[in-house]
Amino acid sequence: MFRFATTAVVLSMMSAPVLAAPVSYEFDKSHSNLSFSYNHLGYSITDGRFDDWDATLTIDAEVPESSSVEFVIAADSLDTFWDARDEHFKSADFFDVENYPEIAFTSTEVKKLSDAELEVTGDLTIKDITKPAVLTVEVLSFGEHPMAEKQAAGFLMEATVLRSDYGMDMYTPYIGDEVSVVFSGEALIAE
Image (cartoon, rainbow, N blue to C red):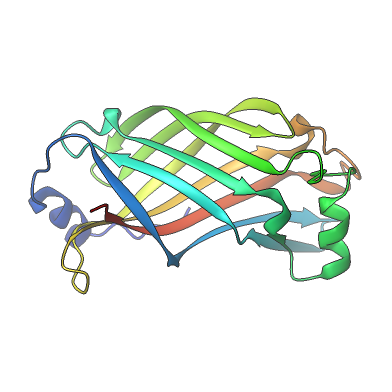
């Protein structure tokens, strides 16, 4: 996992103004990205992203365990930068986007591991199959945004998902079952 937490980030979190709990934030999609990658036959790591998603983020700065996050992702927005592969992934062999247009994640528990690390457990639903998923969350920054001049938060969230858990086991074990999911994003306090 990448390590961006520095003394400055931790200090900015500690000196951030205390906000009344809990507070809603909106992600700045121009500075946020939801991506994934998997091992292809042991020869390469193939990656992609989802272009269309919405998220609801609530942060309790005083009691992080009371924070929550929810994602709704348009499955049809999958983009692996290769049209033929995208169409196959969207077919009934994999995501079956015609019958299952949305992917969803809803947090059920937030644990503060340190001033710059959280563990978020939640329910991940793909193709109407719901399984628990754990996000490791690195808080990159928490404080006043220097340009927007309002409270902001920056995160790096990572999880590993087994695609076979969601009925997408075609070509396993040759093509990796483990899919690495990474979300990096900036969020600004909602007005």
